[in-house]
Amino acid sequence: MKAKVLINKGNVLSEIDDRLYGSFIEHMGRAVYGGIFDPSHPMSDNYGFRNDVKALVKDLNVPLVRYPGGNFLSGYNWEDGIGPIDQRPRRLDLAWQTIETNEVGLHEFMRWANELDIEVDMGVNLGTRGIDAARNLVEYCNFPGGTYWSDLRKANGASEPFNIKTWCLGNEMDGSWQIGAKTAEEYGRLACETAKVMKLVDETIELVVCGTSVSTLPTFGSWEQTVLEHTYEHVDYLSLHMYYGNPENDIENYLAKSLDMDRFIKGVIAICDSVKARKKTEKTLNLAFDEWNIWYHTLETDEQIEKWQVARPVLEDIYNFEDALALGCLLITLLKNSDRVKIACLAQLVNVIAPIMTETGGEVWCQTIFYPFQQVSTHGRGKAMLTTIVSDQYDSKDFSDVPYLESIIVDDEERNELVVFAVNRSQNEEMHLDIDLQGYKIQSVSECSTLAGYELKETNKKGQEIVKPVANNQISITDIGINVVLPALSWNMIRLEKAE
Ligand code: AHR
Image 1: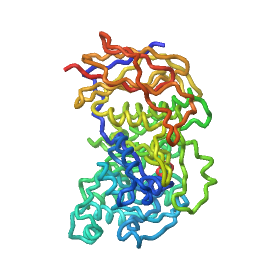
Image 2: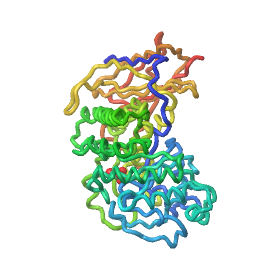
Image 3: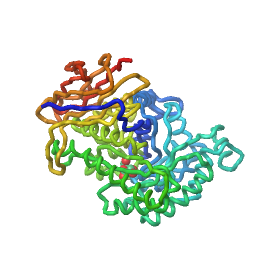
Image 4: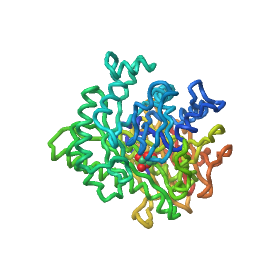
């Protein structure tokens, strides 16, 4: 099969916000306890955080991590996680039916994030709590000193403010499963008043207001509309959440699900812009896709896991080769919408629907989805180019006109590189791809790698990271740019050095 991808130097879609490659750590499952934190592990630092896990997080190049939830956030008292660790309360976490020991709290998490040079995207509980707890938390974290909460932070060991810039106004407040779920009116009013007060404490912060938790809810659309009527002037981003999967075992349809993500994003942009027009304001609202991933392998089995234990091991999806391809399509879709999606968080980072898996007390390894994410977060920096695709198409169960080629090109001026990300969705045919780079001259191919050739259900295991990218030599520089052969069912990254 032949296909073509074309860019023109003058046609830039957007500067990519690095926070597009964010992730998420929730106090749930073995994300914190037994994941990033495992004090009796031989690789742990003096504070109990695993150095081998830190090394992989570093390798993943995650610039921002959302914390501490998730559904957990809506029942959490942040004050439980400060002060002497041995005096912190053990609490029931009703969201995930576990016991929360509070051994890790604000200071411990901030230290971990700072060491890894990761910005924290902090949530405030708008389920069981509200304005007062939120304003106190901003004062505790960001006010320099001389007040009750800022002095308490100092007394607890942080003389300098944490200066947290990005904050979430609750989590999935439209979901019936959410502790303290609200109607759009109730949430819109609360989010508006909380936002005002948080910005009175620190006017430099940015706020993310909750959009729909899943696009299939009947309230999708009207929820956003109502919430934004109340909050538009006071917030900076609207959130989207969505998880995909292949429960029907239909690879053609599965790989087309990124088209649903694209439609979802475009729908939310339309709603934001309609509110903008009605309010006659200059302000354009951007999006935070602050939970996205593949989640379906454990949905049925998790119910059977014993409740009310510490670090109840839920959502430990083991990803396979086809999941890595699907994730690649989702990553490209985020990049294609990077003019409006400024923050995105792969949910989650360690053990819970995660690219990194650990054994409590044991080894750490990379899931299949680690690799496309790592390649895009490392090399997908700079400018996303308006990318034209010419490709044959197919129809699947839920989608029509699905291009076999999914692709985007990024111009990284700092590294003097053009980087092509591409998925060949065809099950049977390799793709002879012409890359037409108008206005550019290519000096050399720095890297051409492909993830291809595995059984669809092939997974990585402890000590056996079988599914990972390898070099692809079927590439050549042409008069117009590049010609490359993409194997059937493949994820690909091509890095090209530009001639000066
Ligand atoms: O990421 C797992 C859960 O998915 C989060 O806690 C919640 O916000 C979402 O429903």
